Amino acid sequence: MAKFKLIIANKNYSSWSLRAWLAMKMTGAGFEEILVPLRQPETSDKIRVHSPSGKVPALVHPGGTVWDSLAIIEFLAERFPEAGLWPSDPDARAWARSVCAEMHAGFMPLRKTLGMNMRARLPARHEAPDVAADIARIKDIWSACRKAFAADGPFLFGPVSAADAVYAPVVSRFITFGVPMEGPVAAYTDAVWNWPILKEWVAEAEAEPHVIDALDH
Image (cartoon, rainbow, N blue to C red; front, side, top):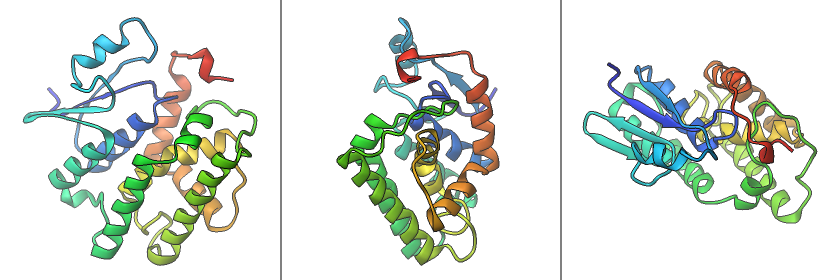
């Protein structure tokens, strides 16, 4: 029996599930994956069996349950320090936590307008001022992280970290909606999109049978 159970939603649509799943995969620890399709009559009841918030993701472990993707990342970073979820340099680690918290708490116009849809290529929707401002800020974050800390690898802080797990759904959104990218932003997007464990998730998202019509247009 797996020591951990990770409860997630549709791989095609659930950005918060993706963040926790990537972090879990980064640890190398085995886990049981429980996928609860969204927008079904039984969705809420099935999620509440595992998650006290009634939301995904949730990580069930021998000592209890952790819900919320950022809390799961912090739990895993403590439990598996060798996985390098956070940068080893204290300054880089503080910056990584800051940009993850900013993503976790903000960018609502982008989230509302550019929903994650791994298998779709949808018309551009990035010109509204509030969405464009979110995109510009995210590009600034990526460029600043790369300039300051990424001498030793292609990710935000050089080697792959939890920050890349947090921003991977945004990379997906930019690709789905054809957001223009160039320079270090384009290079970072390519690195994340070719990250082997993200490619595994994308393949499974493309193959899953669950379709939410309202999110596919």
